[in-house]
Amino acid sequence: MAKKIKIASWNVAGLRACEKKGYHDWVRDFDADIICLQETKALPEQLNDSLVNPVNHEAIYAPAEKKGYSGVSTWVRKGIEHKHTIGLGIEKFDCEGRTIITEFSNFILINCYFPNGQRDHGRVPYKLEFSREVAKKALTLKKKTKKEVIITGDYNTAHHEIDLANPKTNTKSTGFLPIEREWMDEFKGQGFTDIFREFTPDENGHYTWWTFRGDCRARNIGWRIDYFWSTNELLPRVKACEHHSDVMGSDHCPISMILEV
Image (cartoon, rainbow, N blue to C red):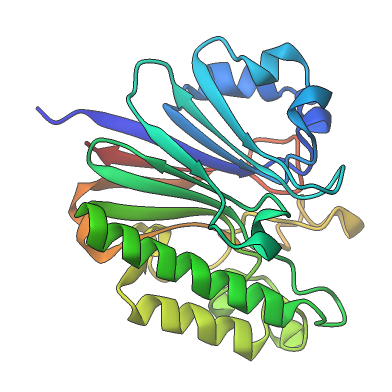
């Protein structure tokens, strides 16, 4: 019988803040084998030892050079063999702590915090360039290692109208600009699949981020911007993909998938 592992991804909107809101309880209760965190907003030396040296996982950190900004972390259950690389090898992206690549025995996991395009759209070109470099890196790794690739994290883009509560009023908002959505179409065309939509194809109301303003989370006025995408050939091994909107601690909720390894 094939072994199954649980992978979680969560934009914690500041790991130190999330720690005070029950992060360790969630880690214990959710019992994921691999956890990908985005927007950790801390250097390892600013964190409590329980976050740097967790009980059951090895924690890998890629902080931004700028304090209190961006940053990703991947936690791997002790005993699971892996090797990791920090960043894409491109300084203008790597200085912002946006990527950790972890290679396992029969798949590769890329944990990403995709840039926000900003309200004035000033960082949209940077965001799109980063996005294309991530896809390029994934395809290069697949070709080189013959392993399938998962790219998870906060993509900061809702792909289709069903992926946000108010599509009509957000066509000029970053995160739902035609040019950002077109990149996701391009990404799909390169041989990648949005795993959640394989399990929940046409339903709206499934979101992963809600602004803190206006009681939006309680009213479920949100956006689906956190994803697991993978190379198409991985799909037969994926057994589930879910959102966990009941988990508080951030303006995002965790997402998870079950993978046969």
